Image (tube, rainbow, N blue to C red; front, side, top):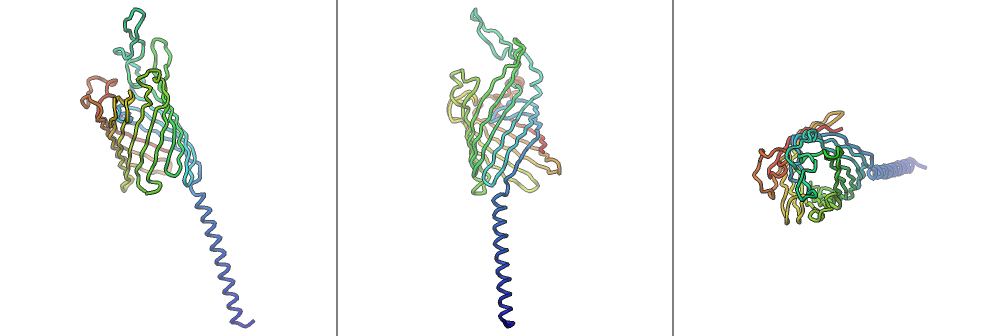
Length: 295
């Protein structure tokens, strides 16, 4: 074999080895891409808020709200289960005050049943969510605890809600979502006026600015009559805006945020303080400032 043929043979071998190596590397990269993000994830943290706001309602004053969740994240799917709680400063008082609940005795007279006159009670929520290709289905079990003075026992009541959500960010890279929530079971469903499967429709959008500053807005609506959102027909019940700043550290993340909420459906004057804690849930304008820590 002359030098020319030898050089050609060597070049061909080199190209073949290079192509095989490139193909093998491409397959490895594809395999890694397929497995990218498939991992166990968890979140734990807590927020301290000056007011507990929920879907356009004032649900309590100064509150500590811890949360924990575990699950997995894949390339197009994710699963998480966890718990969230809220315990407010007024929850510790269990004040009596004027009767909040009354019952009719055998003589036909109304009397106080022993329930403390406070709207705010400890809350524990258990939730599970499954995400796939931008869509999400989940369920939340709300457990509330109130102290019954006449029996000296906690009187728990609950609500069970299902949630459907779709995020445009998965396909279009637009941080916009639409969410539907419906109560499917509750202690109060024994009353016919609450057996309407109270529902809530929400549209939300958020934008992240430089320096980890996030602005999020949402519009919430209740489509039909129910006593959860205090509406007798379709009503816009929540116009919410939240501004948040985050700081990343090696061991945790700190967040500071301010949130304002307007409930156009509420008819009482804004900032009606004279009624006390128990009546603030009916005011149409609310706000809160919070500090969070996440691990």
